[in-house]
Image (cartoon, rainbow, N blue to C red):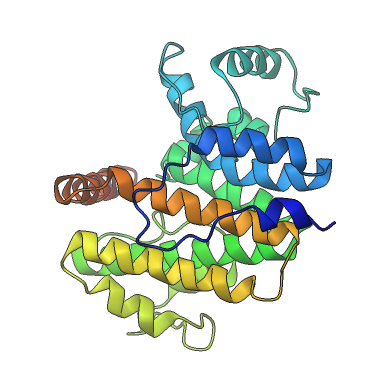
Length: 279
C-alpha cells in the first residue's frame, strides 16, 4: 500500500535536528489512524520495545510509571497479567506471543541458572518475534541492530573480562559466532558488512561521540535501505525510527552518557558474578 499524502507531508529531518518539536506519542497515534491494519502492526512492533521496559517495570512494581511510548497502559498490563496467570494459552489481541512466553519462563529455575538477565531474555524473545514479521525491511532493521549491539557488547566483554555467553543475545549466526570465537575480528569478517566501522566506533573513548557515531551508522542504514521506497510504509517506519533517535539526543548529556556506561558495566559485572556463583 502506498501513502502518497502522508509521506509527502512528512518534513525532512537530519541527525542534528535536536530541536524538533515532534511529540512522538502524538505522531504515533496519528500514524496508526492512517496506516492499514497490517502496517499499523509493524509500527506497533517498533514501539513494543517500550512495552518490554514497561512490562519489566510493572512486574517489579504495579504502581510504576510507564513510558507513554509503549503500546499498552497500566490497565492493559494489569488485565493481561491476570489473564496470563489464569490461562496457559491466553487469547487477547493486545498480547504479543513473546510476552506470554517470557511470562511463563522467566522465573523458571533452569532459566535463572543460565545467568541471563530478564532484560536480555525478553530482548532475545522480542528480536525473535521481529524476525517473523512479514516486512523484509523491518526484519533487516532488527537483524542489523541485533548484530550491531552484540558486537559492541562483545567488545566490551573482551575489554573488561566478561563472559560474552550471557551478554550476547539472540540466536542468529552473528550472535553464535560472537559467543564462540576468540579471533581478533570475532570471526565475523564476511558475516557483517559494517564490522570494521563498528569496531572503530567501539574504540571511541568519548561516550557521547561514540553514541553519535552509532546513531549516524543507523541513520545511514535507514537511508540506504529506503532509498527506493518513495511512498511505502518503509518510508514511514524509517521516519519514526529517525525521530526516535533525535528524541533520545534531546535527553542525552555528558553526565547521562557516563551514567549509561556505568549502568552497562554494572549489569555486566552482576551477570559475571551471578554466572561464576552458578559454575
